[in-house]
Image 1 (cartoon, rainbow, N blue to C red):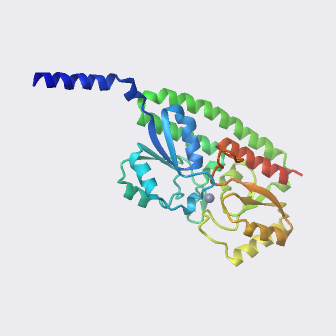
Image 2: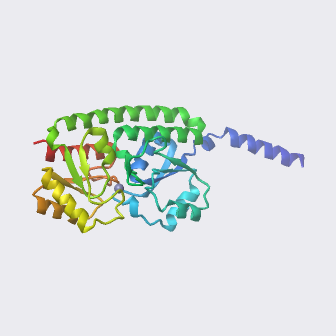
Length: 291
Ligand code: ZN
């Protein structure tokens, strides 16, 4: 009996002292690729991140798989955007048994509204993306206190890069003549971008790609593009290009290129990280609008 107790005590001590135990990375799930990139930047090598909706996926219309249920059941934290972006989440959580804590990355951001709907695309303003990073930093530190200092340092250096990126976007927009600071693309994904950087933005369909534009909406947009001399329409990586091509054909506004709205690209694409995505978008915008 005494021997058993001794063994138990020894193994308990071993467990506490074992560096292997302390070094197991924190398992996290992010709902879509852009959030996954923020989490990797803050978590560094102390976390293991999986994303549900990967590169080039459309988070609005996603259908979760049985593999997603297992990912969530294994994770300590689930990072979501909120503002109604992940409409499929409640059913997925129910199926997974709901043990992971949920971090809402838009916490503390005032939502833009379109009618009664919150616009979920806050990441398109780099200033709001900085708030996402702070929320993620705090959630990671709370879930894994021994690594809190590492998360704080990672977040600080990433935030410095985002701060510089925000300045880059401002300078790029400054090069566009004020009368040409107008853009149109398929769904309402650039409201926060437009509000932050002083661009007029219109879209035929609402804040979700799930909606479809009515004939009346399209006629109204065509009239608006003509009346306001909007110089270019932009395609979206995740959306069907036909609507924009039709508006371009009927108004004479040129196709200005393809923007990344709600996802990153894969490693070989134009936008494998959030910073690459914003740079790709501003290069595309300025080359179409600046002259
Ligand atoms: Zn969207």
